[in-house]
Image (cartoon, rainbow, N blue to C red; front, side):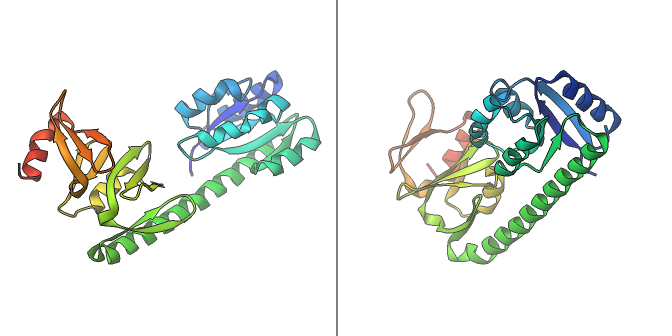
Length: 251
C-alpha cells in the first residue's frame, strides 16, 4: 500500500496531538512530515517537502491564501478539511477536498478519509499511466511523419518537430519553445523527450536544454560557448558537452 506524506496546517493543539498519535499508530500508510499554524507560513515548506496530503483548518486566513497553491510546480496535495464547525464542510466541497472531518477527530473517521485519499491518488496514477502509454503510442506512429505529441495537464497537442526551437526543463515538466513564439508546457520531464527526439538535428547542450540546431543563428564564444537562435534567445552549452557538440554540428 502507498505511504502518504502528510502535513497538518492548524494551530489547534488537540488536533496536532491527535494527528501525531494517528501518524505513529499508522506509520505503514502515513508519514506526517510537518506541522504549521497557517498556510501562508507553510508555502515554502510545502514546495520543499512536497506532501501528498494536507490536513487543513479552513480558517479565514488560511482560505485567503489557498490560491497560492496553484503556483506549485508539482501536483497540488490532496486535502482533508478539519474543523469544529460543521458549516466548514461547505468550504471543503468548494475547494475540492477529499473529505471533511469534525473535531475532535475520530481515529476511525481518519482511517476512512485516508483510504479515500489513497484511492484517489491510485486512480490518478492509473490515469497518468494510460495517458503516458497513449502519448508513447502516438509518438511511435507519428515520429516518422515529423510530428511529436505533447501531453499537458488537460490536453494532448500534436506539433511539427521542425517547429521546435528548444526544450527547457522546468522542474519535472518540460517547456517547448516553438518558432512562432508559442510556448507549451508538458507534464513529462526533459529526459523523456531527450529519448524521443532522436532526429539528427537535436542535441542536449545542457542538463536543462535540448535544442534544434536548425534554428541556431550563430554560436558565440564570449565567456563560454552559447547558441543564439533565430528568436533572439541565447543558451549556454555546458562545458562537458562542448567538445561533443562541436563534433555533432561538424565544426
